[in-house]
Length: 434
Image (cartoon, rainbow, N blue to C red; front, side, top):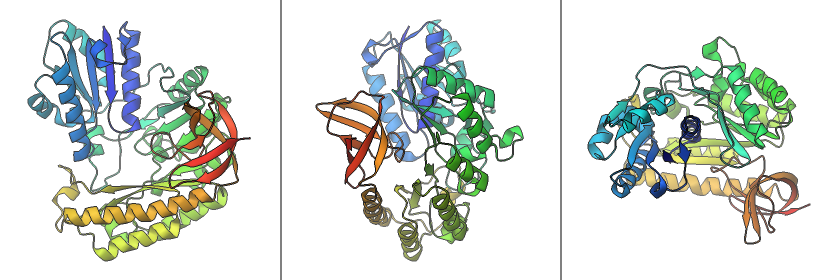
């Protein structure tokens, strides 16, 4: 059977899609790049916030409307986990749903669909050990490696624990094996991901397990060029983790710390770490240990009860800490979360106005941070080229969410070249090969 997978949402979903593809190919099925050529269509959905669900429904409707009588359609992922019955009601041509905790059984599900059983619902409520499968390079020279799934935090606005359950860490041996498989296929950058990478191993009885994992990975894959960390919870960044990042040459001097706000009272209502002084100290320690570190964060505007004064303090927080990159999100009330029932909702037009102000400020800060790179010679990982131009990234940029480095010549995708930064733009850089 030929299958086609489309992924919506975050890189963690992308890893699940790749692993489903690995399992299906190991069972003799063949992946194709166009839905019209497939016998089986899989949409790996995102259910994190309302806008993501709308996008997932739009994709499912598109596939459902265009599929032939002989094609099968599966809704997988986060939205399938939480809203499976609703999906079947809204998009009746969906033949099966499979959730985030049961996707490792994708082959068995397909076998039953082939046998004529439908509709089917494979949604497991209880948690299971995070799955590891044989990995092949599927997206060029960079690959995501999920080291844990689920989350133990109790952030008031977040539905992830409702979808994924508590954190389950992947055993170190499985992480090493996947990394070795990817590097053997030419991957030069591995991005470690989880809902909270900094809490890796806590459920396995490890204390401060991420630094140990990084040291062991550097030994397991010595030929790996870049090892990048995403989704580091601010309250779990230890001095030992900072020192490990500074000491290991493979680890990119790049830290993604989702902070969500800069006012302590808003953070308290969010059930987030609310000691803003501790955040200032953390940023200071990171920059002292790694003077060239690139820092990324996320902010939510329009959280229930957010006053103009609290919002302006968040802007001041951004001005003081000068993060290299910041993603700004409008608050979205999610059913089942504590924040969904909070009073004093901020009007939509106020949220939109605050979003614009925060983005405008951060664009200026990002431009200044980019300007400080002009004259530096950096390794650039080439993602693609054509029409006399190459696009790549330095250690300062994670794939798909950060900026690009533009080089006015065609270079081999997957190559790592040294280039001098000659121009700064708000989000991208322009460079010339040395």
